[in-house]
Amino acid sequence: MSHAITATAVTQDFGNVHALRGVDLEIAAGTVYALLGHNGAGKTSLVNILTTLAPPASGHAAVAGFDVVRNPKQVRSKIGLTGQFAAVDADLTGRENIHMIGRLLGLSARQSRDGAAELLARFSLTEAGDRRAGTYSGGMRRRLDLAASLVGKPEVLFLDEPTTGLDPSARLELWEVIEHLVDGGATVLLTTQYLEEADRLAHRIGVMNEGLMVAEGTAAELKSKVGGHVVQVGFATDSEFSDALRALEREGLAADFPNRTINVPAHGASDVAPIVRLLDDAGIGISGLELREPTLDDVYFALTSAPSHLDQAR
Amino acid sequence: MSSSVNPTSNKPTTNFFVEVMILVGRNLRKILRVPQLAFFSLVQPVLFLTLFSQVFRGLASSPGFPRGINYIDYLLPSIVISTVAQNAVQSAVGIATDLNTGMIDRFRSLPITRGSVLFARSISDFLRSGFQVLVMLALGYAVFGFRFHGGFLGAIGMVGLSMAFAWALTWIFLAFGVQTKNPETAQVAGFMVIFPLMFASSSYVPVETLPGWLQAIAQVNPLSYLVDATRALVLGWDLSPDLAQAAIAIAAVAAAGMFLTFRAWRYIGRPKSAGRAKRPRGVPASAD
Ligand SMILES: Nc1ncnc2c1ncn2[C@@H]1O[C@H](COP(=O)(O)OP(=O)(O)O)[C@@H](O)[C@H]1O
Ligand SMILES: [Mg+2]
Figure (cartoon, each protein chain N blue to C red):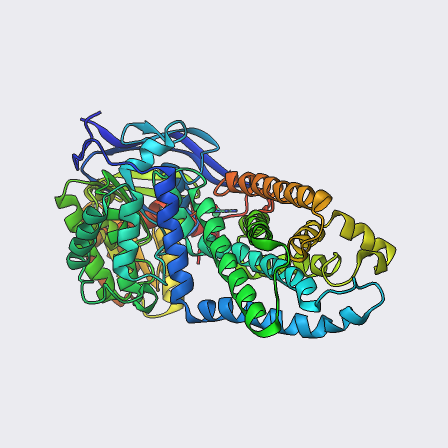
């Protein structure tokens, strides 16, 4: 068993901003790992360190067995990077973009040309391949960016928010492309703000918040952290909603509250009745009730919100 | 370590020379492909030569002007050096644009030699300057009656010095571009440096006629030395101090520029780089 990526106590500071505050990471070769976190969580800072673009303030990291600080060149020869902002040359054609990266990676002109043709076909860009990349749509540009990072057949691929800013259909297309990367056996580290994306694409997920890894595991493991189920109660009015919040809080039932609904972590159907009874006794009407599997949203909310958001709601 | 999942043992590698060639090709292709860039690269020398040669034509009738010399033979070297200097500002714009669009991050994530991106930029911009020098010489010959009086070697020397200076200057402006990381800022800053230097020099009037403080600037202004030397080469004058001084000026500009560029480059991506906004401790990350 080998790890394609390891990080130990990695920190990063920007002046007084502590972008990373001691991150540990182990990613098995041949797997897809998702770093999940809101804007500013530190995802890009970590990717920049792992791809040798920035040295860590402290800590160690290795990619494909090479230390990112001591052997950056070896690391670079093993990785592909699709950064947060599509880095394609708008004045070159799609084909030229891929070809240039291939040549810089040391492929012969022929290998690189063949590689470009193959990648353009694989990412449905053959027709647009001889147009300037500046004329591409956002989704096409991302696909081209991804294609360019694949021309060297990297062992480890970094995708920093590959679908941010894409419309739903372009996102779906990109998901399909990413799913097939793993078929080829590469190790993929992707970052995302989208829970469905992590759930759909990744074997393991690391949840980041304010420079720390706050939870880690498979989607199922993360879900189980909220208790296995969620009772979701909806309210018709704001006053009923806040009354209910207070009533539940008195009973020590932790709860989330997006859009006038309250999500109560639960262990199963047996937990529904007490909640309903409690609200009924307090004379609070409800407009909807559902027992459901927790989504990653629930996990994320539970892990990354301040310790007691009920306090803040008061 | 057996994490190889795409087993391509013996990965091919490139070398510095090949990388620079590839990247120069890319830069030149961009210049040729963007019509405005190609157009202005051609128009700029034509405009400069026409404008400056006509505006400063009266210089020939001023008392200090050397006798028996065609005004254009005296002025063309100045105009060439001015154009080359202005053009070097484009190096700042080019590298700052690449930094801004993320191209540099992409290049830095590749196993290529440190500095190949910078050398490529300096060479492609130097080639563009060389093209402009040739355009100006051809136009000068065809339209304005410009002639070399220093023989074949003088002509070669004049073109060679101008080009070497163009190359050296790109490094100063690469430093600007890497430092500012912003094409517009780099352009304005570069222009504000070059424009005064164009005139606080021996380019368009004899240095002795300048006010004292401008004379002081002109004395240390590399453009003065380049103008003196290329002018001497064109007119077939005695080269004894000028040529050596111009060579020293070129070497000094290149060395200073490279030093500043590589120093700024080292801090690319490094969080403690100067000029980054510092935030108060504990201010939470923006979440939008
Ligand atoms: N170059 C920089 N200068 C100053 N602060 C930065 C810089 N880059 C990132 N930060 C800060 O570091 C924190 C983490 O940012 P980042 O790693 O980009 O997060 P993410 O990619 O998860 O959105 C944020 O607070 C961000 O504002
Ligand atoms: Mg980011």
